[in-house]
Amino acid sequence: QYILHDTDIRSVVNELLASGAEAVSINDERIVSNTAIRCVGPVIMVNNVRISTPVVIKAIGDSTGLENAMNMNGGILSELRYYNFGINVQKSERIDIAAYKGNVTFKYLTPAKKEE
Image 1 (spheres, rainbow, N blue to C red):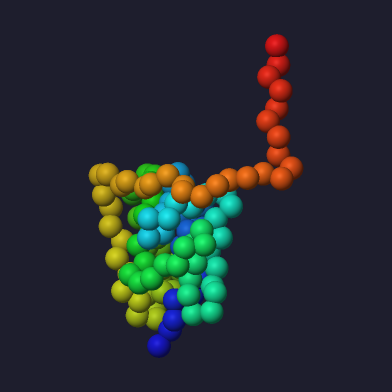
Image 2: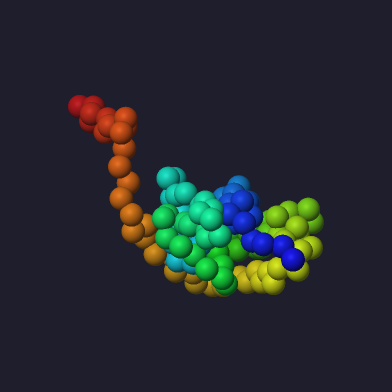
C-alpha cells in the first residue's frame, strides 16, 4: 500500500504549471503564488484547508498539451499509477475554478508609483 503524500500532489501541480496551466485547483481550493500544500500529521492541507479523498485537481489551459503532459511516461502520474492509485485524466470543454478565498498580504512589496 502506498499513501498519497503532499509531495505527490505538489508534483502534479508543478507538472501542470510547467505544462502551461493558467489556473489550478485542488478539491476546489485555488492555487496561487503563496499556496501551501503540506502535510499536518495524517492530513494534507491546501491553503490551510483540510482536503480528503478523492483528490480532484482541475487545470485550465491547452487541454491536449496538459493531457499529454499528465500521461507522459516517467511523469508523476505514471509513478502514482505504478502504486495502483486510481488516476483519471479527463479533458473538458469547460472548467470552473473558483477565485482564491484567502488574503494575500505582502510584507515588502509596495505598488510602483505611476509615471507621468
